[in-house]
Image 1 (cartoon, rainbow, N blue to C red):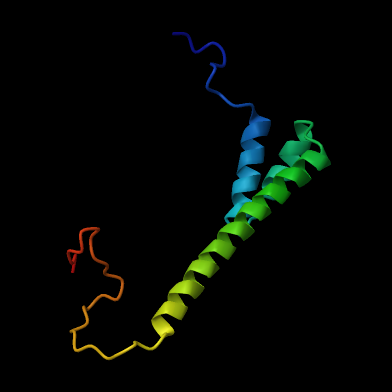
Image 2: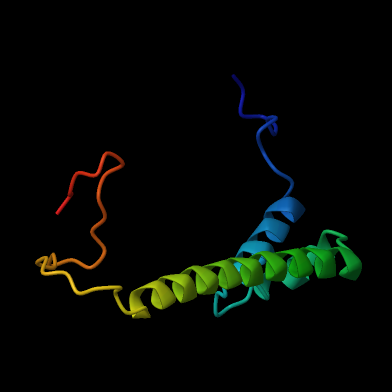
Length: 107
């Protein structure tokens, strides 16, 4: 196999730059992928294409945050609800221990 030219698994640098930009935005990286903007313009990627990638990345980031918040809120509400009747069962040291599907304790 020759190393003379690109193979079928290599991505065009503009695709790599778009993926990097999107990942940085979606991950709330402090750099926000801004270093990719000049590179993308040099590759001929339009402002509209960049805007679309940023919009999609923000949507994914915001959706993930909303789902995490909803899951946390549900768990908080469940734990905040008073028990129907007090039970005299010792509490495991770890509050995140859950039983196996067959009901066996993993703690």
